[in-house]
Image (cartoon, rainbow, N blue to C red):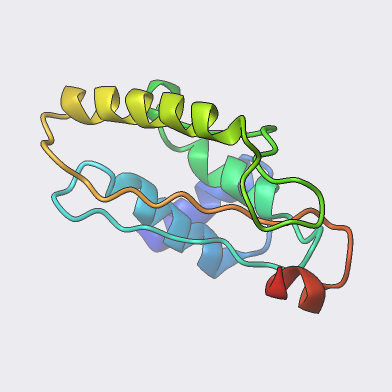
Length: 128
């Protein structure tokens, strides 16, 4: 079965990152379980985090996805949220609650993570 999943990724044009693709896929398909998996993608700057995330999410029905793609919630060189970020996150929380209710799930713990841009060294961005 794992080989079939890898082959599906390859047919979709995604090569490399075999372990990360499988772990991401398992997290996606576990989304309706009582205790779904959660992952954080950590790679060096410009190493393809967004591409890997997009590839994994392609195996999830679009109507079940919630993304903040293209939304900068942090100022450059800062680790604190922008003032308008609260509104974006509140809207995302409301959307997430609606989707969870459609799964007939009463409560889930949701973790929101982010990453720096590719400016600066990996060591600097990790500290930030």
